[in-house]
Image (cartoon, rainbow, N blue to C red):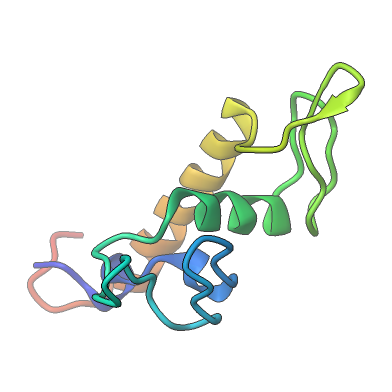
Length: 104
């Protein structure tokens, strides 16, 4: 059984730079149809907004990862993405632990 928490992507709280979906609404494709998953850049924006980078020390709240003296224009360091994924999985587990029929 898939819980509501598992179906909701946390990056939906960020505005999508690709399709311009406002916070809380899903991303859309070029035809205006709802996408199953958010655009990758929206997930990166969520990661930058909530997680510091252990590789380069970029701060949360929008800090860009750095590669040498230059900021990364796309994406985030793998360690930062992994920290975000671990936090997301823990939050989903905590939010869905009370769902009937879900193994504990």
